[in-house]
Length: 317
Image (spheres, rainbow, N blue to C red):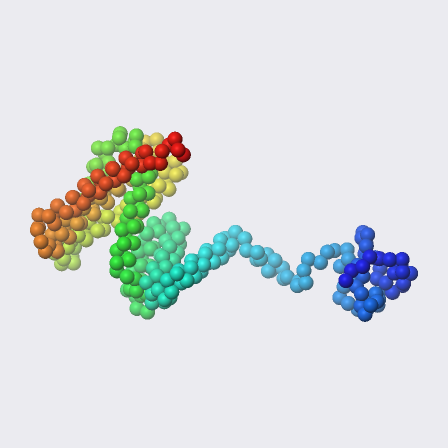
């Protein structure tokens, strides 16, 4: 209870002295009377506490004052940990046991965190992040006692690979410059098909003579590996494009367009050799299945692109 200083208190010598630069003296009533100066002096409160405002009841060490609250990189690190924990908690509340160790969601989420961390660390040494992701993926799938990646549902794994490929091709398509692409259309075709075919043939020959694989399996391996090139090239080219390198000569557009065509060719030819190797029906249909799917995809993309010219309407935005 706080009361104003009154005349009766001024005549009492036991009343606490006034603090400096204060218009009022706060007096604590104890047993219906003012607290005496003698009792006040026995407390841990001194005159300095009247002159300087008390910021807290706990004296914080200087080391903690420097560390708390976290700033800079430590703050970013703790933020990432909290976000990862919050995301896992959300997944657990939505999926239940699947987000616990041994579940499909837990395996995918842990694999994502581990591979992203490895990619970030290798990126600090100017190494493509995908290399670190691949190494960590091999370890988490094949090393005993930590091979929890085997808990991932094969159907989920296949769908996630398709989504990853779609994201890479979408990013590369959004980074194209149409005017530069028109000028370099013949160069793009040469740069797209020659490296892909050369890489696939070289790997097929090596797999046949070194690994003893059949030719069909060797070409499948070659086109699988050649299809992974855009995952390494496209992100680095987009970074250089953002910094302004080679834009005037259309180098980023040339490389991105070539890698996109490279990927389409590799996937189509892989489908051809896969259909021939596992043929259980019409062989002619299996041979032309890959190119036919490519043509259908191009037509579908063209139609959707035409619709997006008019939907949404520019006037309505």
